[in-house]
Length: 218
Image (tube, rainbow, N blue to C red; front, side, top):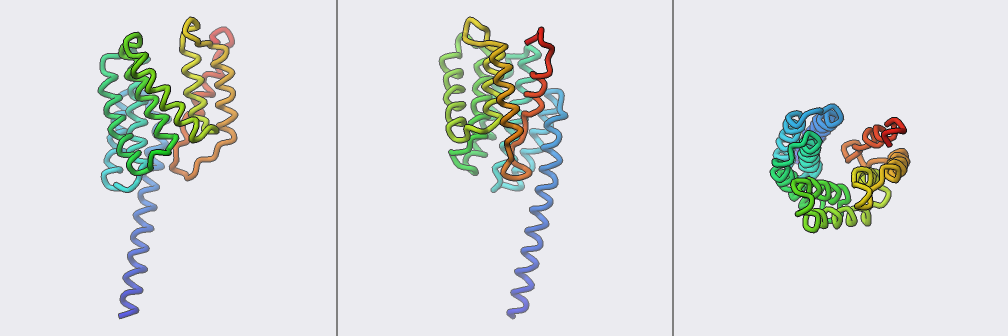
């Protein structure tokens, strides 16, 4: 009986290890695609993929986190294309996934608070003048929370740099100051090590892009 129980326990451990390895493999494959997606449709497909992984791995916070990130990146492309009218729906979907991620990871997760900031920023861009004091203020609060939790996080530095870079000078923005902040973000990327191979590690390419722009565009 003892031998049977031992064999059963070892078999269960092997299955668990195999399942974990399978999870890590498919997550790694999907995470890699974040950098290569170019269109809103690409990101929607990727978000759906992460959602399906999350439905099977219901104790893991990273699948809904990446589902939310994919939605936010979809929204950012839509925003650059001038499609503001659908950003509320995109932000709402991202916030739904972030709620799931936060329930699994806990309230003190800087990466989740940063994505909440980005989702509120999408909402604000639907009508910046009307929403600056509501969604804009919420975005600022989430960014402050994220930075307090993890001040060395390079993605926080990246988003702060973006905000300064794209804000008109009359409202406190500055392209030259933004570039200096992108340099700080890149330095933080160089020093940063994610907790695991699956943990958030996106953003370096964006900092490098802004720093590669011709001087006259800065």
